[in-house]
Image: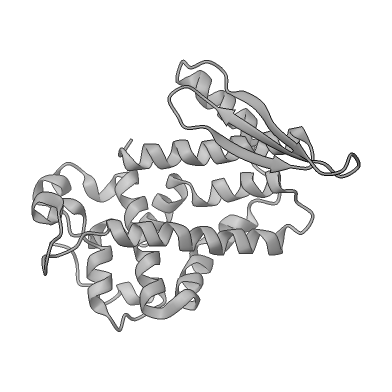
Length: 237
């Protein structure tokens, strides 16, 4: 049985007025018979996870713009991906011992579901979505700053650039190197904007824009890395 949620509000920095939102955020699909919701049947955390992902992205993007005023779009994208990736979310969930509070089917909990990175990351995003619905952006942002600010502090230097990360990932998977193609070049000769598409075997094409081909390639690579991460998360890899 999950522990009492009495202390969870302290960890979240928020006491829920609509406690059903917290219940929903902590309910894994395995705990809902058949994994489906209809009528008045319980909901799992997937809808709140969808919302929380977007709220987290907004708050982190806003924070990075304020912290790194001289960073270009590619550098911001590298930092952004480091802060919203599955491993970071799962790490935050472990800091709160969130897995212990999750409502999991007996079989899922017995299989170690309370410590699976994908489940912890999904639940953490669901918590953010629930905070947003119950207390607005302020409540969600306070939670995010509480657990992410020290991680942003550590990013004084941008992580390894996105193209290098993507190249290394493709190599580790036994795939051909990523490809980059120019889609458009717009603007005056002295102030151009390039759009580049990045692709890798087995994943959708992603695009990036920048004032140089190099910058646009980095943004496109970062977008493709984010897509790969989302795909892995949705499949529980």
